[in-house]
Every structure is written in C-alpha cells, then in structure tokens.
Image (cartoon, rainbow, N blue to C red; front, side, top):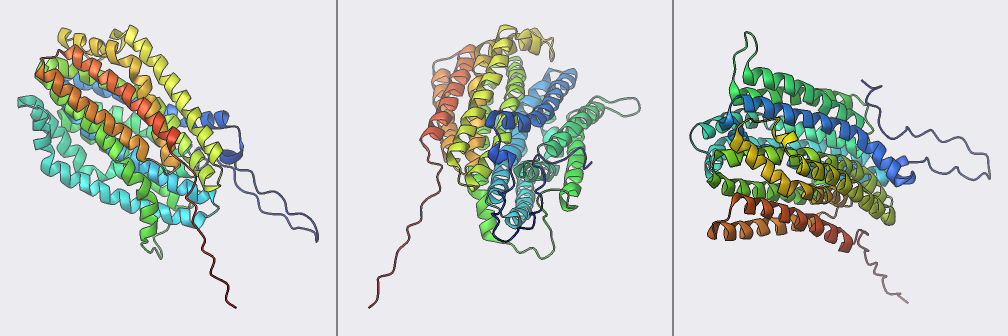
Length: 482
C-alpha cells in the first residue's frame, strides 16, 4: 500500500554538516511552492480525475439499476439526491477543504506539529457533524421529503433510502475528513485510490442489494444505500491505518491530545463558512425540485437524470479545485500571495474549459446520456430538453467550484459563499414569478441555466476583489522614558 499511496511531495533530505565559514545550503525544494503552476496542478489533479471518473461510473450504474426498479424509484432518487449531495459536498468539499487548507498552511509555514494536531481536531469535527446529520435526517428526513413533493410509493422508497444511508452518516464524514488530511499534505494518490476502490464496491454491492442476485433478494432503495455505506467503510479503514501508522506527512496521535479552541477555529473559519455553499446549493436544488414536482413524475425524473450529469461533469472542476487547495495553502503559508493568485486563475480556466466542452457536446446530443437511464417517452423528453437548455452553462458551475476551492486554500471563502446566496435568491424570486405566471417546464430550465451564469461570474468577481494578503498587525512602540 505504501508504494501505491506515495505522497506527492518528495521527502526532505537531512541537512549536511557545514564547514566553518561555509554558507548554509538552500532550503529543500517544495514542488508545490517552486515548480511551474500548470504542470504541477495537472499532476496533482489527474489522480482526482481518475477517482471522480470512477464516481461517474457509480452515477451511471446507480441511476441505471435504480431505473430498473421503475420510474417511481428514479423519482425517489431525485428527491433523495439533494440530501446525499449535501452530505458529500459538505464533508468533502466544504469542511474537507477547510481541513486541507489549514494543514497545508501549517506545512507551508514549516510547522508539522501543528499540522498533526489540526488533523486530530479535524477528525473530531467529522465525528460531530456526522452525528448531527444522523439525528437530523432520522427525525426530520421523512417530513423534508414530503415537503419536496414526495407522495405515495415515491415517498416510501425515498424514506427507505434515507433511513439506511443517514443512520451511518458518520461514515462519509470520516472518509472525506481522512481524505482531506492527506490532500492537505499534497498526497492526492491514496484518497483517489480509495475513491476508486469505493466506486467499484459501490457498484457491485449497491446493484446486488438493490436488484438482488441469485439467492440474495432485492432490497430496493434501502439495499442501494447499504451498499454505499459498506463501500465507504472500507476506505475509512485503509486511510485511518495509513495515517495513524506513521506513513503520512502528518503524525496525529490520541496520546496526550489536548483540545484547543484555536485548532478548531483554524479549520472552522474556512470549513464552517464554506459549508454554507453546499447548503445553499442543495437548498437551491431542493426548491427547484419542489417547483418541478408540480409538472409530474416524468418531468421530475427527467430533471433528476440531467442533474446527475451536472454532478458528473462538474466533478472535473472538483478534481482541479481540490488539487489547488494545498498549492494555494502552502503558498499563502509561505507568504507568496502572487503565486497563490496565479494558481487560482489557472485552475479556474482549466475547469471552465473542461466542463464547458463536455457540456456543449451533451447539449447537442442529449439522448446519449438520457437513453442510458430510461425508455419512458415522457422522462426522455424532459431530460433531453433540460440538457439542451442547461448543459452548455455547466461551465460556469465548473468555474464557481474551482474558485470556491481556491478561496478555501487562501482562507478567504466568504465571497464565493455570497455568490451562492445570490444564486439562491435569484432562483427563489425567478421561480415564484414563473409559478405566478404559469411558466412552463422549459421556462424553469432556462431559469436554472441563468442561475449558473450568475454563480460563476459572482465567484470570479469575489476572488478578483478580495485581498489574500494577511492582515498587518500594527506595532505600537512604547514612549521613551528619560
């Protein structure tokens, strides 16, 4: 395992003995601080791209075998999807970004002991948030799904998934926290390998338990959820062993651990604020889903298929954005602000172009995606129309995701959060006006596309005008005393 999961940063060589009067050698080279930006960014991104491509396979496979359970199961997954995405993005992209940023800044400033202590506090945060999600969804999940428009068998299947998945919500929180600890050190390979491993297991176990195989009966939506949790648990076990066995660049330990508020603050000042972005994003999707539910099950299922493609394509931006966090965090820790900004805009351009090319291609040939999941004429029509309108604008979602991660690396995440707020308000007001004027499903699809443009441009503007330099502390000189 140690051969496969080698960290991205080479080990620092021991300093040689100096002769009297000799100049000290230059400090060891740190590739994340000293190498060319684009090659380094791509080198860190490719393991994430491979892992998230595997995640895409899960999206395709899961939607496909859920489709075999029927249109009602697809509609149930559309209801559940916002809450699952909230869990994964909040634990991985938001709080995970805060964890990776804090550890990268500590390592960039040359303080590995602080990085190790931050890792322990990050795990405590993951455990706490996982427990909150479990309690909240088991108590209020059914009511939330009903408010979204779930009725009858669609609602029953959605509740079945929620009760299993969120009973083990601490598992995805721990998995993403452990991955963030490793990414903060520059190690992208092991977290990516574990995502790949989980994806394979998730497809096999989710399909087997959901549809049934041989003597194993079909458990439906609860079986799909159980397969997901089992797959995630294997990744938790391997990454925890790797980190606590001393193979990572941080060496956390329970021995002599003292809880320090400053450590929580260093993580939460980025992670807690960043959590409002996926929260608002999911709230936007939830409100939009509730509005579309008025057009019937076929439109809701078609939109759910399109929303899954958005998740798949923007995973490229996630891969690039996650790679930019340790690069920017170490640059900020080392006081190299100009380099940090160049990294941010380079990552943003790569994400915008990558997502945009695929989005435009799917908009021209939407049936290539929709036909994978349903043969129902109504579902296919709704899914294709949504993709024709919205898919070209996925590029702006990619732009916003990349800059969101860059802002996390710099510990200046408020701007992208406010951009997400603007998108939420835009969708609420626009949706209300459309409903008041009896807008069509196509009008709502156009509203979704316009909100993506607003979000991407808002994030770009916020990063452009926000100062990344640390605040200067005024030094007061005491008066001279005669």
